[in-house]
Image 1 (cartoon, rainbow, N blue to C red):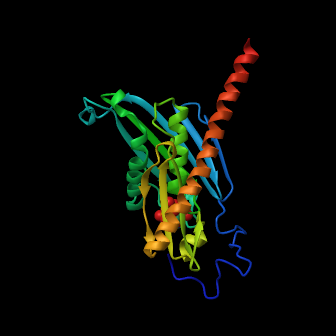
Image 2: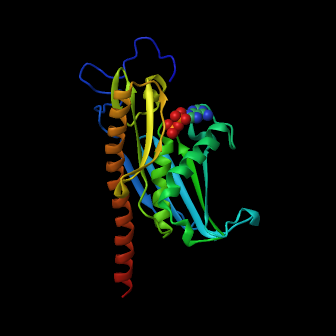
Image 3: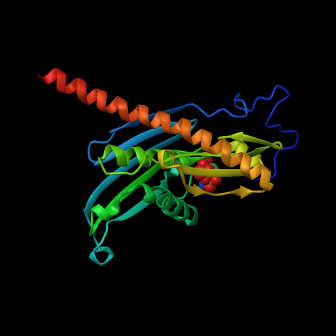
Length: 249
Ligand code: ADP
């Protein structure tokens, strides 16, 4: 939320946004699983101009050992932005924002994992933002959830995520960078669609109670559409495996 250039309109007289989308339209999204040879599970997500890679290891032995829990496994998440991911080069390494985002992503994913099945171990998730254009935490959650499924880690549900927000006085789906910068509010959300559970809900900016509820409803709809894309990406992987098996017979 920044002071906007004078005269800039985020929604035109035809109801179109600066990238041509309608109010309730998602950016184009493409997803692929099993993209890295050396991780147990991985996924690559393009979501508008966002480009995000997620890698999963585990459940595996924990170092340092004092972090082990005798009754359950632990989940560790590192969200990282590449120096070249934003317009002005980002200083490499963790900062306050990435530490906070890592923590909220862990909170969004943990309810889906059955960590009691794996005492004394850790599941490690690495989320690398190669290109950022707002909404990286929700795209990162979607990618990480796919990478967990790709690693074969037992889950109660696939976690899906999307944001809604307010620009030019209107509630819209899935803000891009300019809309995030010059808009009034952003509401990222993650859900476990089959369990009807919300695992992340944040708000940046100002909304009335009614607007907030409208944004939440819209973000849930968006996350459900993202969920379908996640399922399709996983299905494509298993179809490819089936074809490979058939080819070898
Ligand atoms: P999210 O990416 O989940 O929307 P934020 O709202 O914190 O998280 O960030 C919005 C966008 O601002 C990011 O997606 C990115 O495009 C941009 N951004 C974040 N941090 C930086 C940074 N250090 N330098 C330049 N741009 C950044």
